[in-house]
Image (cartoon, rainbow, N blue to C red; front, side, top):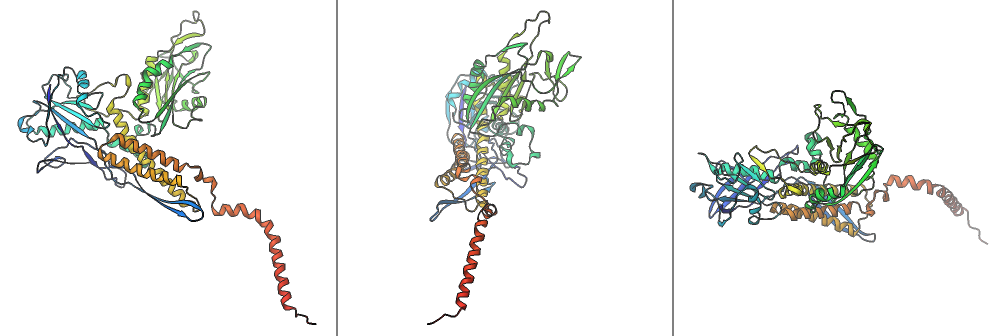
Length: 556
């Protein structure tokens, strides 16, 4: 396939936070060709294919340092929380194959540089790998290849193919209307699916949006953190009947570890496992005579978490959020055990997940006839089936979910890594915005603490952390506006680290400082018994001094 590469600059998306915290999309973009300015995004003459995200986050401003002579260094901080507008920019390159556009439409393209190369492509999965060296391999940058509508590269009925990397292949729509306008609308859909949406940015700012305006999908993912702990637990409530064996080490190495390696730039991860005996769910299942099985209804599932969590014990000593994945082998007297959804239908995976906690899967065992059973029955867990469920739950708990797309869109499977490159970018976009919002909240809380406690002393190291947090947050915002996702995310992480260090510094602990009323309440009972004799003595001395002045002096 021969193609012509025409590279355009990035898209922008302006957002006005408004009173309710929602944003209006305004697609604006100007591309220049010589002295002529062509409106490509928005407006009556063009249609946009550059898509952006809300300029919605908090700008941290302030930190004015001063020193209090004689008492040591102090810092008087004023952190002003603003929903300042800033932009998130996605660099997009559009590559047109020869014959994709008519000659009249090609002359309308605002390009300054044309690159022609030859590349043989056969099938769609081969195209994704073959086009990888030809595109810009940087976080957040996308490449869209436009091929003729009659090209056999894509299967019949497929209009857009999204690969595992940061590229997509689309058919050029043909018709009597404006072809470029149709291409622009289609590319806009592709960029929205591969980068971020208004809903994803809203979810990143969920702490600043009323809860009634958020859906269940928004409350499901874990909040951004510098680290996570993942615990896989095997629950065997009936070890006398079941001798359960699971090769968790090989399963984690083959399924979970490639996924975590892909997320290595997002956070630090630690994985551990445990086997708990005589650990029951704490909910009595209901027996169904029709199916001769036991049922866990959707209404009883919330009551399963607390009794089980008391046996886990991992969250009590962890510094980071803990993701719990439990494999439950039901007791012999409660087998088989199935989970039903709200409509009363059986859940195909026989598993469920709890937002910001983890997931539980029920693993049923085929029991032989009672007279032929040798107890305990050896059970070898099918780890392939189990890890497929846990990996899908792990993606949901990190907020990695697909955007609803038209039927003509075909998405390539992420493969063994469990995560595509553009899905990683989607996660980084939201986590960068969430980190900046977290920095703003932390520094605002610190400012409120300093306003409340007037005699607090700020050390130099705390002041430097505040300065560094503000500078890093501003750097992250500038990098987002420039389309540099990788550097923006790293700057936002540094801002979070510095703000957390400043806020949780031991010298700023609330217990070390007391309000004035507490000081009086503590010291008056201590000094009042001592002050009464002293005051009486002073009164006696004053009386004697007055009497000595009134008495006439005797002279010999």
